[in-house]
Structure formats: structure tokens, C-alpha cells
Amino acid sequence: MRKLVSIAAASVVVMSLSACGKSGYDRARPDEFAVARQAPLVIPPDFSLVPPKPGAAPTSAGNPNAQALDALFGGTAARSASESATLTAAGTDTAADGIRSDVGDPDTAVVDKAGTTRDIVAAPEGDGQDARATTPQN
Image 1: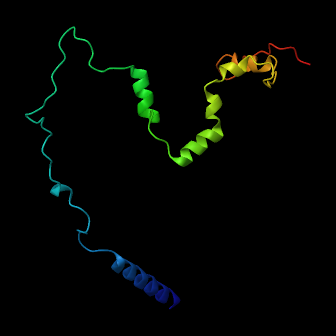
Image 2: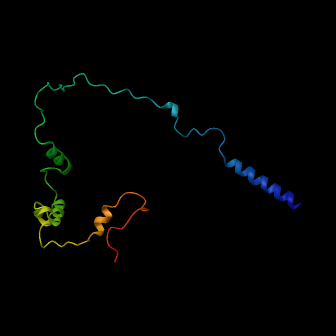
């Protein structure tokens, strides 16, 4: 009897779970065949660019490097108050000196890493199994 009750309970559970599934097709999703194609791009008939003449001087005036820097960093555009404050705090008044003026300065604090850093940078590529120490071991 217990077997019969457990089989009946299992079949009721299976039938109730199968009723949770959707019957038929779910048409709530987009139809992949109903996608419309867009017309290709066409050059307008009044296209006014003229190809350059052979041997003619370039029409773009100025240095391309300066143009790139102006495009990236805004050139001479007015800065906001917060941007100006940030640049002042970063030291734009001394930025014109650059790092090269500080390198040879005797007051510049440097850390001597001896030959260890040089050996690490000059180490050959590989898995390190054939590596040999070039500095004396103390």
C-alpha cells in the first residue's frame, strides 16, 4: 500500500510540474524573419570635395603633432574653475621645467638599487631554469 501511495504521489507531482510548462510556441520573442533591411548608404550628388592636384602643397596648415595635442587636450580652450584648481594643485607652474631639469639636480632624492635591478631587467626570457646569478652572493 505504501508503494502505491508513493507512486501515486510521484505521478501527481510529475503531472503538476508538466502543467507548468508552456504548450506550443512562445511568440513573445522577436521574429528573426521580420527584420527589415536598410537601404545602403549613398554618396549625395552634391559632394563638394575635390581631389588634390598632383604636386600641390597640402591644404592643412600647421603641425600635425600640434593639431593632435589640441584635439586631445583642448588646446587653448577655456578651463573650468575645478580643472584650473586641479592643474594648479598638480603644479602646472613648474611643469614647464619638466623632469629633465630635476634629473641632474644634486638635491633630487634617489634610491640606489645597485646591480640587482639592472640584473632583473637584463635577465633573459624563459622559465628561469637556466638562470645564473651574475651578482656576488653575500
